[in-house]
Amino acid sequence: MLKIERCYDSHLHLEATGQIDLTLKLQHLRTLADLKSLQFSPTDFRGEWLTGFGWDQNSFLDLQLHYSHLDLISQKFPISFSRADGHCAWVNSVALDLLLRQQLTDQEQMQILKDPQGKPTGVLLDAAKEKLEQLIPPYSKEVRRRFILRGQEILNRAGFTHVRDMTWDQTQIEIMHELEQEGLLTLFVEGYILLSHQKDLAEKMNLARRTRQVSSKQVRLLGIKLFYDGALGSEGALLSQNYHGKHHCGVRLWDQDSFRKSLREIWTEGFEVATHTIGDQALQDVAELALQAKPQGAAVRICFEHAEVVQEKSFSLLKELSAKLYFQPCHYLSDRKWLKEKLGPLFDSVFPWKKAEDHGIPFYFGSDTPIEKPDLFANAQALVLAAQEGIQPPRAPWMNYHQHPDLSWGSGCWTEIKDNQVSQVFFQGNPLFKKP
Ligand SMILES: [Zn+2]
Image (tube, rainbow, N blue to C red; front, side, top):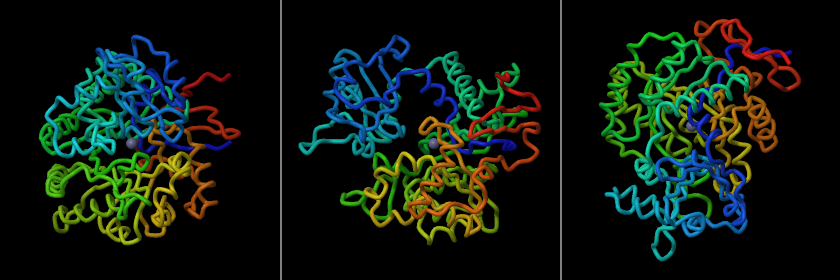
């Protein structure tokens, strides 16, 4: 039997994990027939919007990523379906019209994809997707509590007692504190408040200060999370070269001045910064900006999420910043189909866990659930398969990178593994599951 102490998923989205399990799933979409036979219920609506998650155009056969296909479901109510990476929305004409009637920034305009005639196709990337989401009525607190409890159950079943959550807002923090007080929280949760725009910085910092004041054993705020680029699957990750055979290299979601200013302000109050950087240019940009923003001689805390492509020259900057990296090897299992094709020569710089280790940069493994399944063994398998393509594994056994490093946070938490399966999880000394 194998035992993992403080079994840790170091990058995930807790509420979304439950939400996606309890709402309309689109992972199976291949054909027009699949789309036409899609079964949805009243609970899949938010207000009048039909929403769903999980399509991947790489699996489409006769299905087209165009609003006209979603119009076959309805031209009466708005529809928004999120891609499996969460960075792209596919909408019908009703939703598209609603979006086009808004005041849009240049960046939002640009991220509404157009056909060769310049007409919107109904596909929205990061900033445009986010703008659209502001039009969709939010879930009630009661529903969100159900999502969080479901997410917790999924994570406990997968063996995790410690998680690092990347997308906190005020309501989620409140719900987790309530669950802890009621004795229903069976996770140690640390996390970040998401900051999407500099204009929201003051509000987010206020929330961070208030959260820091609440004393809690199981819930702790680390800092603020910022997205610097998009995802590789939808070609939003910012690369140092064009996507292979294409004329674009991804998106930069922040202007450099506001980014530096935000870093300074977050650090001044002693919070940590976590940055979503998938592409090599995103990571290099952020490392340079962080070094410019860092006060002379002061120690700052900065984390790089995903870091799927990293240039050799970036490692010395990471070292200078005492940065930490957060990898999800399981992304390799999903991305390997097209990774070489999209990246061309940059493929030599993917998944640099061994290189990070050689440079003495600490890193942890996670799943990014619900983008990938929270599955310890998928990460283990990814390391083996990646090694076959020349991506060297780190020296220590994979489970070492799934242990929460803080020995004093959550004693009596361990996970037992038999025959490549989680057999029992102990939380603060007590087993979470009945023996079969
Ligand atoms: Zn994530």
